[in-house]
Length: 91
Image (tube, rainbow, N blue to C red; front, side, top):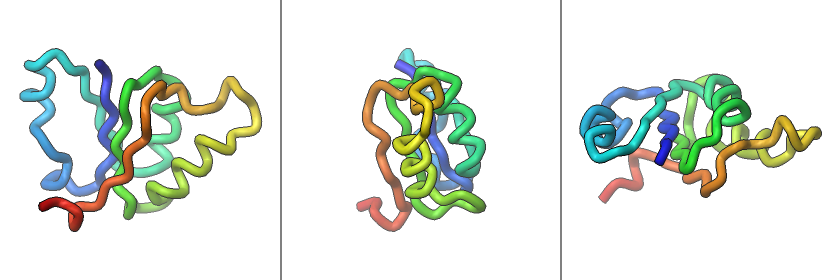
C-alpha cells in the first residue's frame, strides 16, 4: 500500500515513516499543496492524508483542484479516499 502524507510541520506527520515502511507500506511526504498536487497526479497512491492548513495551496483547495481537473488524465490517481487532517483533531 502506498501512502502520501501532506503535512508542513514535521512533528504532526504522524507515525515515523520508517516504522510504517517496516510494516510493508510505502510512504511519500509532501510539505505543501502544490507539491502534493504534482505527486497525486503522477503517482497512484492508495491513500492520501492532507493537512487542512498548508502553506501556499491549502489542503481543501488541493482536493478541490484534484477533483475539478479539466482533463481525466490529470485527475488524482489516488484510488482511495483523500483524508483531511488537522493536528487539533488528535485525541
